[in-house]
Length: 173
Image (tube, rainbow, N blue to C red; front, top):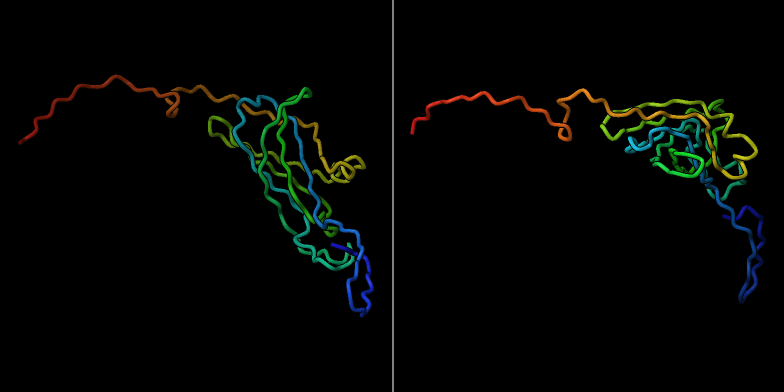
């Protein structure tokens, strides 16, 4: 989308219009350290305080609406030399200037089927100079994924059946 004024003259023949294109969408990545990643199965994230829409053709800040939206995006696991990470990427029109905080909620499913909810205000991390340049938010918090409980009798992967009691019942034919 071009945000430059271009004057088109009423001339016959071929005309060339030169303009600079610029995206109205920002792509961000969130990275959070975790421990016991082998028990991680999947995660969904909710991020508050984002702008709902941006109209094309308006000057950069004038096209953004005041409507607030909560973004939902998937997250996965990543292993690097620095450690184990929960990582997710999302697209946004930017932070809603009428919202004071950005709240991140991550809902994690473990390998054993348990659900873990993690909440954090990431407003400060969203506006650091490095985050604005790289569009990566890296949190040093560590989300601990607990090992599955070994309570016995649990599910199809750890079946436990008591001995059968013998029962004889006559069947009429």
